[in-house]
Length: 114
Image (cartoon, rainbow, N blue to C red):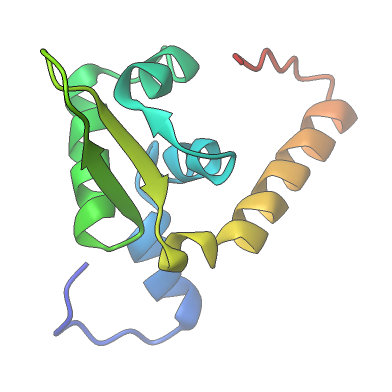
């Protein structure tokens, strides 16, 4: 996301912030609460470590999540939504609800990982 870029529609800006692959999925998991890096990896088995790390850094730069390094060796890291990230909760819920309805309507199996 570039601050100097001119947007012609609010949806264009929103998609620039959260529209990249895996970004909304990460935010949806963090909407449930604080998660450590390993928990996010388990919940998203199809994302590579490199991609997850890259998306987490982008979300941190966008101030949608915060990263906390805890004591320990290796130092555990956890992520949570910032207030700005929490403000996306209705958008994330709408995406979740639409996906659930769409899957039901078209008999698409969902296998959520908890």
